[in-house]
Length: 306
Image (cartoon, rainbow, N blue to C red):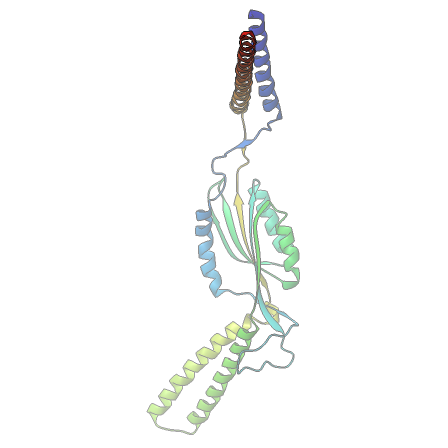
């Protein structure tokens, strides 16, 4: 009996050690959390918010040979090309911030890009930079492909908005203002009182300011100014610290204890079920034997009655 219990204990200990060793050997060394690993979502929103406000006053447009339906009441000139706005938003994370920042600058220069907005934040280990970059339309796709190879890509969105109607509306408004200016010039040349001339001059000055503002807006659509926009956020993260052998051993021990408890519980439940089945079978068998004996005894007594 003692030898049986000793063998069972040795077998149980061997099973536990085998499970523990297998778990410890097969579990890779995971990286633990690093201090100052990366910017959180809220911090990135705060970093990008000023840029989004600044870009409202700086737009990039490009042209293509396609046609677009003009707004009501505006007829596009013959051969007018489609005007569009194309914006790519990328987020890259890196453990080699300085090297990858230099790669981004090299990619911008190689693709003829222009840094229109730049904002950096954070200390070493938690640095991040936001760049608003204007890129020639024909190099837009290639530039994005290069950026995606720098660090680890965590986000990419590309949006194309048709701006042909906006462009045609600006041209129509300028034409209308130029006609109004010519009409006022004609009225001013015909003479009039001093008050009338002062009012006309004020009106001409107001129209001239509007024409100049429209000229600036239309200038953004000129062929020499054609660019597409790339919004890039490069965020620094520290490489994760390797997990210590003590931590791995503790994890393996916890897992082994949980699995071993499950195996032991299953074994006990199976043993209990077998014991219960054997006891029930024995009990039923005993009842059958008792019933047979009673029947045989009653038959014998009946046979002895005269």
